[in-house]
Length: 360
Image (tube, rainbow, N blue to C red; front, top):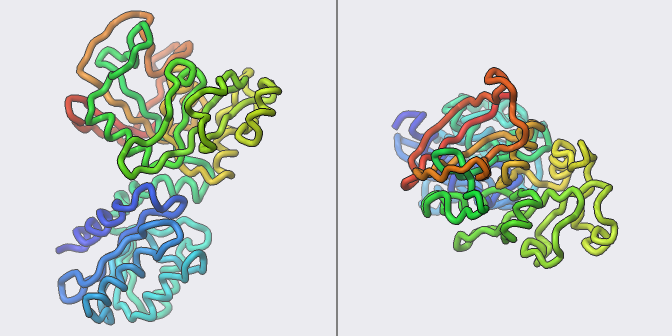
């Protein structure tokens, strides 16, 4: 196997813990000696052993000596004491000969110090193996650790003619079963899910993860004036945040207590940029935006969207009054359109999934 193949193997290991390591990154590690893998590991959950330690333990269980071996790890080994001791020190103590790293860790507590620590101990280090892929797997961590703001994924499902529901509001179901199953995976892997009050009033959703063994995201409802009924399904436990302005219903705010998060006001509505800053302070590192056309338009306009995912179903519904994924007044000129980078296409059942990154 080539070094790229070993690193890709480590990336596949890292993926196994998606949704369980937040706010820590996804990391995989592989130990190679004599041209074969003698140990492998990944960071399984927040607060648990890091990938490198799990790989050492895996090798030890199989009776392998790691001295003089090579290690492939998707992210620079840590150099500081946190929930666990520094992995760079463990690598030095195990007398690993060479370490291949996918990418440097931008965490200010690491930021190249892990590499320097190993090099000063005489360990050879080569960084940048599959750097782009290693960055992609941790796009949430990279944004949160550098900006302390959540990574926002705007997800929508629409018909081929760009409708997210019929003119009556009926939307069950626009996309196919396979696409809906993938959305449940997204809910399981992201920390929060955000909708506007319009969605709550129209559909009364639970906004839970329906994947077996899945984790429910924190429900974030953008409700500037607290119009939400107290009987709404999203309020039936404490796993929610209501984003409102100071102009909201004072009596309802009093009843809902600390579940209400007051933000700055922009044109009488929740300032989404301020909301992201406050959610970041609360430890929300990622959000699945499942809003309707109004909230999607506001989010794109505010520049808070980091990735868009569109599921396009092979259906045509028509109707000038049928809702679209992005509403509002719209832009006046084509050269004002939001351009997209890194566009990817994938067939999901009968649907076409398109994901991309909006240009800033």
